[in-house]
Amino acid sequence: MSMDASRRDQRFAHAIWRFLAIIGSSAVLVACGTPEQVVSNNWDGALSTPPGQEHTPPEALRRGVEGWALLQCVAGEEHQATQCILLVETPQGWGFGEAALRMQDGLRARDVSSYGGTVPKPGEIFYIPVMFCPANDPINCQPRLKQQVIAFNAQNAQVRALIRAGNCTQAQAAADQLGQPHYSSVIAAACTKRAR
Image (cartoon, rainbow, N blue to C red; front, side, top):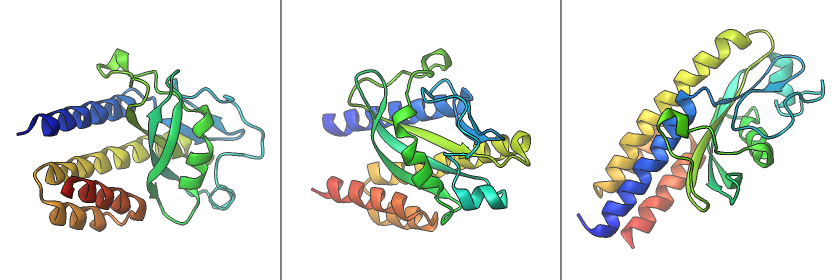
């Protein structure tokens, strides 16, 4: 394995570890209840937002639909989330991805070291899930969505392993099977970059 590939694998492993530490530490952002609350040590925005539920997509709020989005961000000088892109949104079509992106200014990567992970250095990529729970089921919603995020992470690890092994066709097929167009685009870009 080349030195560049080894460093890339090491950086990827650190990014995944930070992602798992964020998930495992209950540092998952959850927007739920009335008034809406965002619960997390990785959140620097207002802890209680106006009764208008500014984070949860309005139609999802009206219908009591739960969902989550996964952002890939670059750590700023003070661990703030910058340059975030949407990787995953589920269910699609409810606006959870756009809502998570609007929350970017309040996100920080700082509550991971006590769980064995490392806080990303400025310029490093980190992942942050944002969960939206309806007011009628906030207690059951968070564990249910957390399991979905963990399951996605396991699938993502398999896709990334295929890329590292040079099996971009299989990686792209596996990514496409997840039905997440943003994620498929990121995987396609990673494969294109690797092919160069």
